[in-house]
Length: 441
Ligand code: F6P
Ligand code: MG
Image 1 (spheres, rainbow, N blue to C red):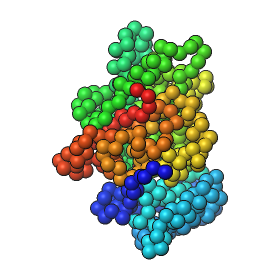
Image 2 (image 1 turned 120 degrees about the vertical axis):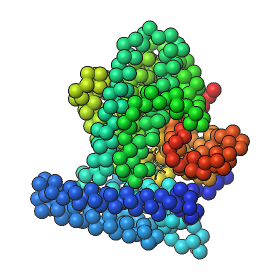
Image 3 (image 1 turned 60 degrees about the vertical axis):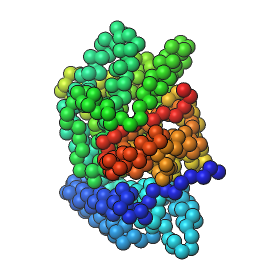
Image 4 (image 1 turned 90 degrees about the vertical axis):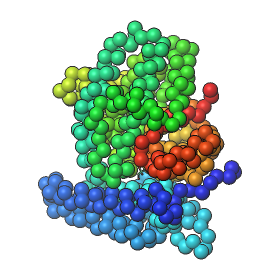
């Protein structure tokens, strides 16, 4: 097996991982408890006393969780039976087996950061499913919806842009089409600034027209492999036989504004014939506050369709049609909410890996996907992306991510060190973004 560096961890006092575990995730837990409190009367109306009792139970489980976290207690196995419970418990045991006797038990500040964060969101889910009849409740739904409503103006601007573009798309020459593709890719990139786990669950919507800011944001794209994406897809388009398909997979990240930017990109891929099918992958349970579930996906398309704005509602109607015709397909898979790095996918979720191998291109949205692609490890800045993927090469892939964690590979020698010297928090504020491609050139 290849030698890989150690995981990012809360053990490194002062690191972004440490600060996240110490400050940000307890804050998220507190917000979750508060959300449940605020829904008490809704639970009563729906389920009577039973609903109120369930709310109390969920709150007490979550308060216990917060206490475990703040006092750095050992991880405990999951207890409630769910599709992934055994895989999770097995993984917790495996992590324990990696420790030396003197390290004691796996716990919050002494485990890989990726595991810690995933474990917390999975335990939140466990507290909810242990509390019927409110076991359907998505504690983050409100903030995801708020992000969508607060981004209305930007969404209208994007939908209008797309609809006008589609009307003239046949008249565009190759270069103009490429320019439009690049514009929508960049919009999808900057849409990734709207992650709610980063802001501790506080609103982080998009209320300026991002189309007007693209030029100003260009200097903040640290790695830009957009040209490779264009070559790949325009080649597929040129060489495609009549009845054959070009499949682009988008591994989604956040709902709300970012999801709109991804759907706009997905629409453009079909309208430009750069792809004939777009497959979206979302999360099966509420995850990292703002990540997209099937409910968010359907809800958002419904909202867009019923907008009073002509072009926005046209987008929603078209998107629904794509789904009906099977040109857009949404997929669920439990793997996306496991703590494993993606190089473990062939062993842990061979069915998913086989599915991904059918893609012509996979776009991984967001920071968490980047962390899982690279194993959330302390790689040197100049290590090639291909190497950091550690054997995960199902198909040509590209990550589209704003940087919100202390991890970045594939930079020029000295580039990361220079950024660090002039701007110590350059890789954790979401200010910079990347398009990083791995695949045939
Ligand atoms: O805690 C903040 C944070 O967890 C990041 O460190 C993490 O990688 C990110 O949120 C999730 O971001 P994204 O929504 O882009 O995957
Ligand atoms: Mg996210």
